[in-house]
Amino acid sequence: MQNNMLVTVISTGYFILCFLIPLGYLFLFARYKSKKKNYGRAFIIALIMFLILFGIKEVVKENFLNVKPLNCYLNKVCEEKEDEDKMDENKSEKATKTTTSSSTTTTTSKVVKNEKTYEKVKEISGTKTDKGKTSKGYSIYEINGVTFVDGYLIANKSYFLPESYVPDNTYTKADGNAAKQCPTCIENTAYQAFKDMKADAAALGLNIYISSGFRSYITQSNIYNRNVTNNGQEKADTYSARPGSSEHQTGLCFDLNTIDSSFANTSEGKWVNQNAHKYGYIIRYPKGKTEETGYIYEPWHLRYVGTELAEKLYNNGNWLTIEDYFGITSEYSE
Image 1 (tube, rainbow, N blue to C red):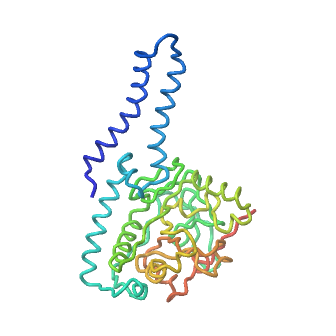
Image 2: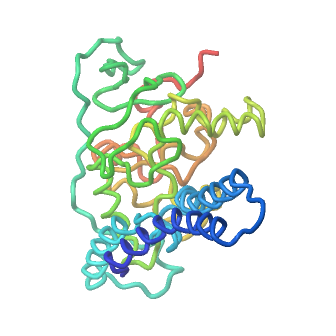
Image 3: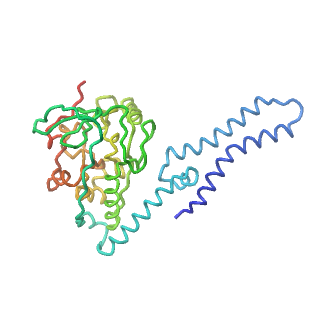
């Protein structure tokens, strides 16, 4: 475990150096440079020094969040992760006393006995506006522009979230203006369920972690536009949500581990597929259900709905989609 005081000292010290080094250069320039002195040029060089030093801190934060120790020291983002790790280690230690595993090749077939019930997330506050019924008779309504079906928040190609929507009551406060994703900005009920799932998986020698969590409307817009530029809109629409239609903006979903179809064949992927429903999670975009969801198979993408609905959608291993279960569509109007 990192020492919090040491992290604070190093982070603060580096921040101070960002200023001291350029100032030191200007001092030496003024004192020792002889004859004609170009102070304007010296000031520009000092400014470049500052931008480079401070830029290193920001680049580390942008690209290595919750991954590299360097980010821990420079940006102090390790403290929250350490607290989480402590809780996970305690749960793993407790679970290990009652669970044994002969090898990692057999863990995916083991069934975790989880008798907890994970409740669905409560609706947001506001006035309900009736929007009729689904093809299967479930009530559709909006609260502050957010669509709900039978009490479950819906975000897909047919039902968009407002640009201003930011989930409340998240483990880490979500920022609607952030231009990057937040792994821990997950609704508290859902995040606690994930921590239980992570601990039980760890007891079997498996490592699951959140690679991509909450994304603001701005973040999703940047990601979608980049995918359209690289692969064209038609292809991008099969795997990338348009801004406002992404579940990542809800704070109720996340991507696990390797964001690639190969995740399904890993020990972690197989275990998650068999056990996620026990923690209230579903494989949101199951295999062979593209026509219903509008997206390709994503074994890494989990959505929290609570154990009651998750059990039904698990369907003894033959996953149902939210669209099929409720009788709703997922199609862009244009």
